[in-house]
Length: 300
Image (cartoon, rainbow, N blue to C red; front, side, top):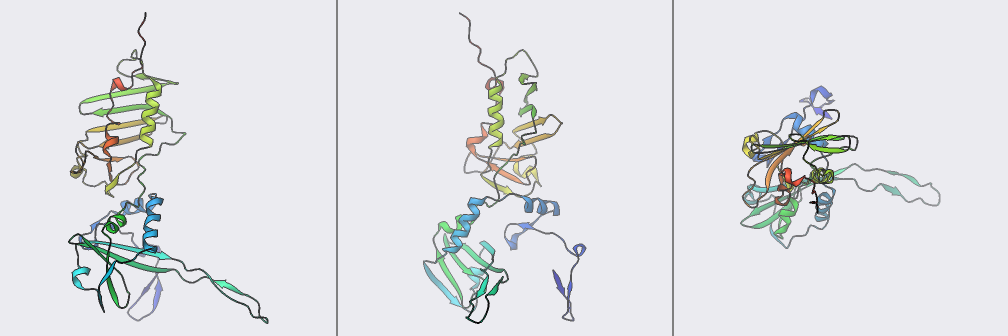
């Protein structure tokens, strides 16, 4: 990385001269992130399927019609409030020179990476787009579903990672004022408040498997700031797992979610941000004692 001074000379920048910055939202309504949040996002896993879908869309991007062609993109499109910017980098194939009868093959040379930027905007339920830097600047109209496809969450929705060597020895579920605690001694699970209550170890194992398979519907925020905004300052359900070495994993679930469905906002240990938990998974977390009790056959 170099910096060009007023004298026109380029000088290399040192690591201490740089800062890691990032934001969410559109550039004109950006929500700036803390440095640790940016670093966590850079380390987050990507959703390979959604990324590949976007790459396929870019490769086959075709407008249904051209609505403007001029030296610049008309301001009504360029300043649209609902806008998506997709910047991509690709590496052209290495070029080789075919040898003549009197020369040897020239080794392949790797050209520099190239970048491109596509803008998509939504105006009056219609989708328009253009390629930045194209001459002339052509604005095309696209299928309505294209905008939503480009809005797909490219961050992996995997919520929890429970390592195989991280043996869970305690499960605590708090729903409102009720708290259920299960402890594992050896291979046997027991109800902490009353060890004589028979607990089905298989049901506990199935609950832990459910937690491992939790997948976010989407991310409502890529930072954990302002938990009150999502109702996570007073969670509806808290699930806490404790390992043998005292390590803890917590999941917080809000009492309310988005207006459209019965989903919930949630966050978890090791996850940078607040995600939306699908409605079909919400009920699988707020389990009670009866859901873990072993069925005892009645005598003759």
